[in-house]
Image (cartoon, rainbow, N blue to C red; front, side, top):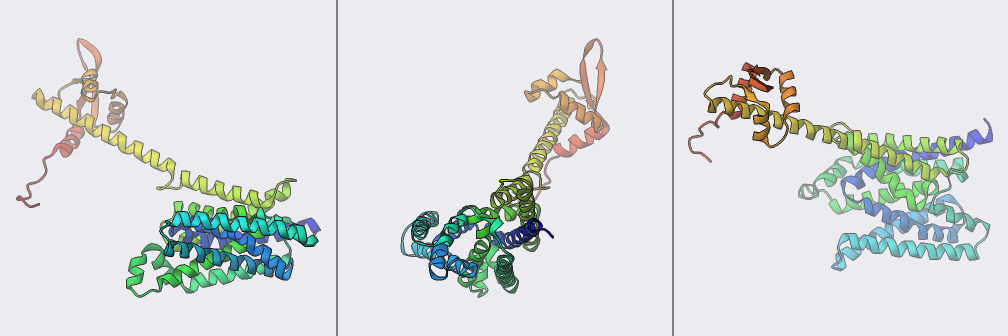
Length: 375
């Protein structure tokens, strides 16, 4: 194996770990409507990275520990602002994100001005530097990811309850606050895993995009987490391969773009929930409603003229509906509900209900059964 092949393999493995971890943990952030919290934790990691470097140098475990501690403190800051002030959660999130990221930029400038050669590489954590990833880094990422996913598996029943119904979980005696704190910590761990791959600025997308894509396809929690992990792995490996094959493309942004594309396609085409399916369903329902109205109009004209086989002129039907009905009548004819007939000496199109159409119109026009005066 050449050096280039080895580098691509390491980057692809790291991207796969990031995608799987981010997909699983991002699912809970989406369900709990905590997407912006992920952005806060990602930006708050920057000062932690700088402090980790000041304490222990460029070693990845030290940097990840610093980022994790900083993220946890940022989450506690959001909770404290919400508890001891009248600010709403979105304001608290915005304040903490801005302040912590600004502090991180100041620390980064200080470290780069006073540190050694290794300090220059800290700026790569803003947008990621996958090419600098080593096999040992991937092993650390995999260990953190396994710990996070293992914690999810261990607390699955409680996590599921808290995600869908906090009040019911609290009534059952589930420690809701502890579970939410654990989920926030796990989300911080997922962010720490991805910092070297996609960076502080783009990391939130790797949490949210795979989960949003999976949510469009499934309705149950465990298939959602599995599918989100699969989408995350596809985005990670795909981004690593594409960036390796095209000179000058950064891996992190390509990974994020692929994950976002998967989410966009899912939101558009997922059966039952996708935007395209909803448009088609609405059009189908509108066509069915218009067909029912046309059948009712033909039946009403027949009753008004005392002839169930009354030949209604197309213009008369259009006038009753205030719009053209030719397409609807053609569709009803294809379904065997109406039939086009001639009406000499007139040459315009005339329509009459078939027996099937009369039965269909009668079913829609049938009066409601007498309920004996009950409400």
